[in-house]
Amino acid sequence: MSTNNYRLELGRPASGRRRLKDLLLQNDNRFCADCKAPDPKWASANIGVFICLKCCGVHRSLGTHISKVLSVTLDEWSDDEVDAMIEVGGNSSANSIYEAYIPEGYTKPGPDAGHEQRSKFIRSKYELQEFLKPSLRIVSGKSSIESSSSKSFMDSFKSTSSQRMEGMVEFIGMLKVKVIKGTNLAIRDIKSSDPYVVLNLGHQTVQTTIIKSNLNPVWNEEHMLSVPEQYGPLKVKVFDHDTFSADDIMGEADIDLQSLITSAMAFGDAGMFGDMQIGKWLKSDDNALIEDSTVNIVDGKVKQMMSLKLQNVESGELDLELEWIPLDQ
Image 1 (cartoon, rainbow, N blue to C red):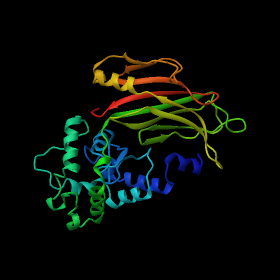
Image 2: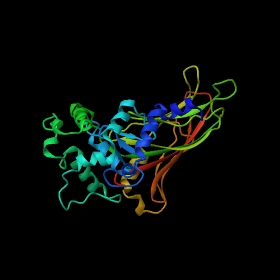
Image 3: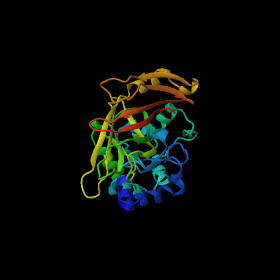
Image 4: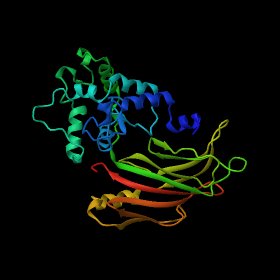
């Protein structure tokens, strides 16, 4: 992969990613700051901690005015956000303040903790600040953390306390999207195209890698998105990457998530059921489905396979697999 593609895929300069990766490799950052689950792939950029997928869901429910959650590998990071993570110094430094006054005998949630226990702890730790030294707690929207010897935490608290409550978004689950392959995609260069796929849900956008000179690309890439309480369609667009001009669109499609989410929520814990069909999104003139798309429980997971005929383009199909991940999983 070329340097240009590497930067485009990651959405930030290589130097920023390298600095973030170096920080993640520190011993204390190899485990979730809240439950000690290994190999965290998410972070709270304004708090300065690395967290696991399960804790990530709770952090998102707090709202961005408290915790701004980003994927270490998928999201776009600004230099300021990377700098803030490095300034905090990692999970041990953060926990030395956020968990400084945990009551004796209090048990932190472990990697296998349920959603209720996990949520209660995280809200107590960051939203209510019950485990901070009292003089460091934010009161009436203003920080009194000036007494702290840690400048990074002072700046962090000032930043979070100054943001508006209206930015809060409640999330109901996670959506794993596997972009499998494209078939007979449109030609946008002389004889071929350099396709990549962009997925958008609410204010979140993720992108696959670019595959050079291929009208039948195979990605088999998985991308994670949070599903807000007021969710709309998952928007899919395919582009041809151009080095010297704007990328050309190669088709698009909207995916109705209702059949997947309502079916998953109606059945609750999918692990209690055997493999079975629990829902269906029907092909119609109003959607991009090539054929009906069923929602199934497979090995205890709720999944939906689909083949889409790309819209507003002369040719092209796209195969995807969706998986619903509840926050308490």
